[in-house]
Image (cartoon, rainbow, N blue to C red; front, side):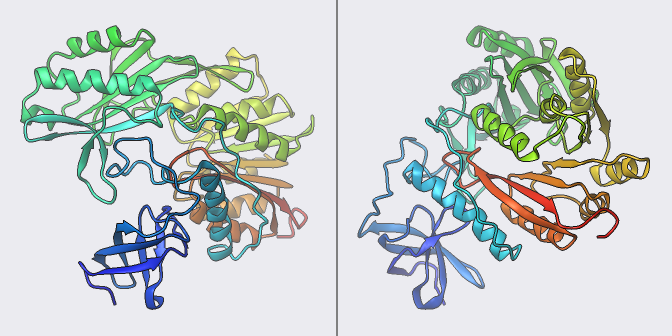
Amino acid sequence: MFEAGQTLTGTGVRLGMNAEGVLRPGGKVLFVPGLLPGEEAEVRVDTVQKRFAFGSIVHLVSESEDRVSPPCAFYGECGGCSCQHMRYEAQLEFKQGQVDDCLRRVGGLDAGVENAVGMDNPWRYRNKTRYQVGASGDVPVVGFFARGSRRLIPVDDCLISHPEASVAAGVFRNWMSRNCNGDDVRLFSGLTVQVSSRNDVSVTVECERGGFPRESELVEGLSAALPSLCHVGITLPGGDCEDQENPAFRSLFGAGPFQESLGGLEMTLSPGSFLQVNHEICGKLYHYVLEQATLGIGDTVADLYCGAGALSLMAARRCARVAGVELSGQAVRDARRNAEANGIQNASFHRGFAEEAFPRMVAEGFSPDTVLLDPPRKGAHPALLRGIADARPETVIYVSCHPPSQARDAAALCGMGYRVAAARPFDMFCQTAEVENVLTFKSTQEAGHA
C-alpha cells in the first residue's frame, strides 16, 4: 500500500468524481488533483486511507492536449473550482461521463447520456456567492476554504462570480479592517451576495449575535460601491435567510425583494430565495424541461421542491393546472405573489414536505399527468418516489445537482414501472466538478398496476 511522503511516477488513467486524476500503480488507487488522463507525472503521496490515497503533482513529465493555464491567481489553493486546468470542451465531456458513470455504477442504468449543454463564456456566471469569513491573527479574511481543508484562503476576486460579488466582499473586508479587532471578526462566519439578472444586489451577513456595532457604516459603504444595492440583511449562522419571518433574520437596508426576468416572467424574489446560480444555463435548462414535458392544454402538473415557482409558472402557461410544493414559507409567498403579478391563475402553491404533501394531494383527488422535481443534493425522499409511482403520471422529469443520489432514485423509479427516456447534463457550475442533470422518465405501466 502507499506510504505518506513517498514519491512515484505514473500516468493518469481517468478522472474521479471531483475531477482529480486517478493513478492505479499496482492496481491501487491514488487520487491526484490537477492531473489529466494520459499525463505522466511524478507524484507525492500526501494522505493514505484504507482503500485509496491522495497525492499531489511534484513534476509533470508530459502534458495532455486538454491542459490549459488556469487564469485565476488563487486556483492552486482555493477549493471552489477544480477544472480550470482543463479545456472547456474537455470539462463538458468529463461531466457527461460523470453522469453516465453514476447512472451505470449507482443505478445500474444505461441511459444514453446526451452531450452536456454549456456556455459560450463560462466565467463570471454565478449570481449567488457565499464567502467564508474569518481572521488570520487579527487580520480579517474573506474568501473560500482551501481544497480539502477548513483553512481559509483570502480571495479578492472570484472569476466565476458576478463582479458585484467581489465588490461587496471588498467593502465588507475593508469595513472589518477599520472596525473589528480579532475577537470581533470571529463573530462573523459568512457573507452571501446575490445578484439578479437586472443587477439588483442583495447582501446577507452571517453574525453570531444577529447584529454588530456600526451597522450603518457598513450599509453606507455598500450603498456607495454598489449603485444597484437593494437589500442588506443579517442572519445567524445556520439561520434561514430565505425566511424573513424567522427571528434569526433581520433587514438593515431596503425593502428586500429584487426583480428577475426569466422565461418571459417578471418575478419579484426575496433575498435568499432559491434560483439556479447561472442565469444563462437556468434558462436553457427550463426550456429543455418544458420541451421534454410535452405539455398539452388539458394537462395537470405537479412541481415538487418548486422554490419560488419559476418553472411552475412557465409550465402553467402551457397546461391546465400546476400545483407546486415547497418547504420554504418565503419561497411559497414569493411564488403566489409572482403568479398574481404575471396574471397566472391556474397555479397553486403549497407549503410542506414533498413526501407528505404530494401523497396527501393525490389522496384528495389530485391526478398529475407530469411530475417535475428538483430535490436537494441528498435526493428525493423514498416515500415521495413511492407516492409518484402510485400516482402514475405519464412523465416524470427529475432535475438534480448530485448525480449519485439522482442515479439511486432513478433505479428506484425504474423498479416501480418507469424507464429513463432521456438524460441531459447542463453545465450550471462551470469550472467546477459539479453538474446539473435532467432525467426524463416515462411510465411503462398503467395507473393502478405498479
